[in-house]
Image (tube, rainbow, N blue to C red; front, side, top):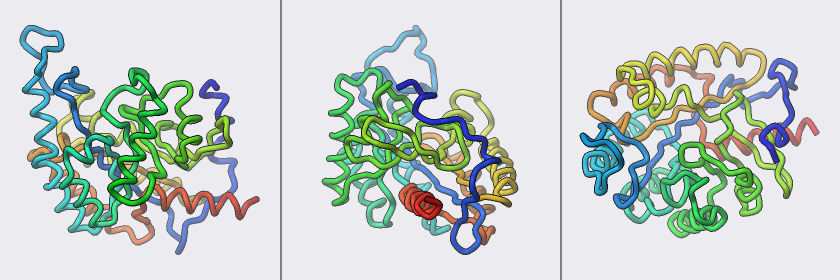
Length: 292
């Protein structure tokens, strides 16, 4: 199916009202992306360009830049999450669960949700066998946590034409690649449907820091500005907002305080729920069932 065949156009102003528990206006979820970069492959992203250009291997500077995030940056971020009692979603490569097992264990001990993020950090259009990649990711998460992942985030938000169909067939219940709404939406698949939960490209540290090359403070400014508008929009029907971070970006020494300040500011709101993806999913499905 083409993308516009998987869902119908629906103006948010014309939908039935969505209500969160306790009169809350907004569900906020934080996604921490933990990846393993294969030093034998071109790096998914770069912080510096090799002097002679091209994609040299091994690319030690850029591989090490990412590795710093898992060795140091993640643990800085973990202190912030613990301080504000936030349970993020760990979007994780299947291979990263073994390579960075202490990270996975720390998330598991704290009750984080684990979300599939590709078996390796590779464009889904370049994966040799997409279904096997998706199955292997689920198997790796199940082996560690004892339960299959319910959600999926494609590496770099990449999909093939068949990705939603395969995900639904393999037991996934939601994905986040379709960044087109402030409320969950149902996508059609060959075997029924799969829910898309609002993710973010705008409040994503990759976009801000690596592509647009903003100062570190941009993360705080943009997150608060976006939150205030979505919070205002939610006066008449509940909304969902995502914050996306990577340990090698927001876990860097000069950036962490801006992420910490975002959580501090948003924690002041008593009518905002800090939920995981599966909590948002269950709420949305219950709302849909009640309307039916």
